[in-house]
Length: 330
Ligand SMILES: Nc1ncnc2c1ncn2[C@@H]1O[C@H](COP(=O)(O)OP(=O)(O)OP(=O)(O)O)[C@@H](O)[C@H]1O
Ligand SMILES: [Mg+2]
View 1 (cartoon, rainbow, N blue to C red):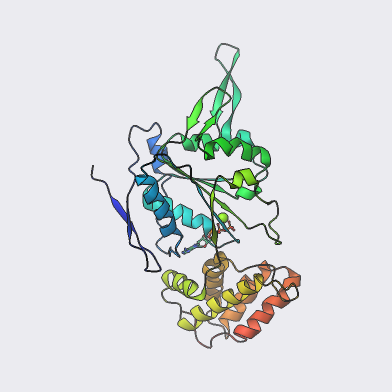
View 2 (view 1 turned 120 degrees about the vertical axis):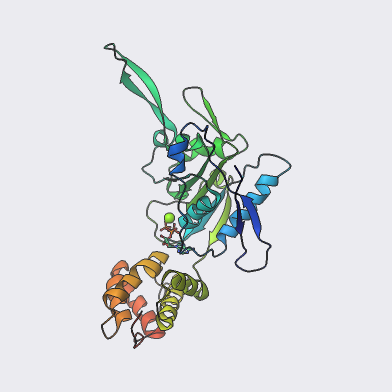
C-alpha cells in the first residue's frame, strides 16, 4: 500500500510547505472499522487561518525528533466560536486520524473518562465484575486524535487523572492494574476559553501543574480579510457589499469586546457560527426585502446578545453600516 502525502501550506506565505505522511489505520487494530468511521471528512469550506500550519510544524518535529518521545500537547485558547475545535478536527481529517472529541465539562467525572467496573450476570445465577473503558481509555487503544475540549471547565479530580498521561510518564494506570500507554499514533489536543473577566459559566483558571503539561496557543478573532475569505469560500455568490459589511460589523463588535472600558464594550463577541451560519440564513430568508442585512441582524444576531448589550451592538451597527446594501445579497 503506498502512503499518501498531505501538504500544509503557510497561509502567510512565509514558511515552506510541510509534507506529512497520512496515517493508514492498520487493519490489525482491534476495532479498525469503528476507528475508520471516526476519521473526519474534510470541510470543503475550511480556510486555514494559520492554525493547521502551526499544528503541522509541531507534527513534523515530532515525527523526526531524534530524542524520541516528545511529551507535548497543543491546547488552543480563544473566545467562543473562533474555530478552535474546527481546526483540530480538520487536522485529524488531513492526517487521517480517528477523531475523539471529549468535552471535559464540570459534570464529567473521571470514571466517565477513564472507566469503571460493572457487575454482570455470569450466566450461572451469580455476578462477575467487568471493567469497562471510559471515553479517553477507549480512544487511547488505537490510532487517535483526542481533543479534550473545554479544558478549563474540568474539575480538579478529572485533571489529576490526566496528569500522568500528559507528561513524560505518558500513560494512564487503570484500577485493574493495566497501564494504557500513549501510542506513537495518538495525539492529544485541547481547547479552552480565556478566563479573563468574561462570562464563561463553569470555567476556571487552569490548575498550574495541569497547564504546564500543554503548549498553549492563543486563537484571536479573525480579521476582516480572513472573514471575507471564509465568507466567499462558503458563499461564492454572496455580493461583495454584503461580504464587506458583515466582516466590518464582526471586526468592530469583536474589537469592542476586547475594549477595556466597560462603558462602551460589548459583552458578547460575534462568533464564526453567527457570521458563517446564522447571518447568511437570514440574508436568504429576507433576500427580497428592502434591507436584508438589517432584518438578518435583528433576527439572527441581536437575540444572541443580552438585552443590556443591545445598545452597544446598535452603536456598532450605526457606526459601520447604518443601512444595509441596497442590492440583493446573492
Ligand atoms: N477556519 C475556518 N474556516 C471555515 N469555517 C470555520 C473555520 N473555523 C470555524 N469555522 C466555522 O465556525 C464554526 C465554529 O467553530 P468551532 O466550533 O470550532 O468554534 P470554537 O472556537 O470551538 O467555539 P466554542 O469556544 O464556542 O466551542 C464551525 O462550525 C465552522 O462552521
Ligand atoms: Mg468549541
